Length: 297
Ligand SMILES: C[S@@+](CC[C@H](N)C(=O)[O-])C[C@H]1O[C@@H](n2cnc3c(N)ncnc32)[C@H](O)[C@@H]1O
Image: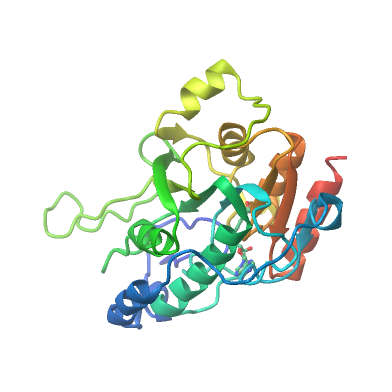
């Protein structure tokens, strides 16, 4: 029986029927309006101003609220944001947005992340590219959107999810040059900074020598997380979040995840002695993160 693009976890791909995926609005919208949008995006993020508030009034919680409006988080208060955005590719929680509407959402969230970051703060975005007919180089669009908002690109990590052959048989034309297709075994972690490439403030780092040596290499081999085990359609592994947090933040910094999902970033931050703040719009996932965070006490 033909498989379909999975709304929960990763599909097996024998005889894969991709018609549902290609019928989504992502593929109906015109790419011209996306290019217009990219040109129109202003520099420097949102105009909103949220004044200083003590940490205990807003941090160490998940807000069940859209991250297009992170009104609870004061300006310049976050050291690191790490996230994996919704891909709009048909997961359970995905809306069926066209490409311009999707990047409109990403730019509104990016502008809010920019506002909440300290000077020298980092925004690390985990993203995969999509489709084949045509291939959508999401990471390239993310660069355009975020540099347009004022972020400075500071590096790119290839997250290698498996070493060699994965279970996918979606190779297109078998043993023929007619239409061979690549089977992705990687995703990207795009690293952006606000204003400065190094942190102007000081703090305590807890990364070990071995961790530093391997995390500063641009390819990370980390096993993917099981959707079933966590109870969310697309969680990233705790190891990925822990590596990013240890490399890019000091102990007691605030770590933000604007698309918190099952709360992996927030749990890793708490385990590593950082403050956290998460935004998520699906109430079940907010409850799932709250439960995971509670177990960390
Ligand atoms: C790829 S998942 C994140 C998974 C997460 N990294 C984890 O390990 O569980 C993206 C999440 O963004 C949420 N989301 C979508 N639109 C949102 C918005 N406007 N504000 C906040 N969260 C949103 C989705 O419900 C989904 O749970």
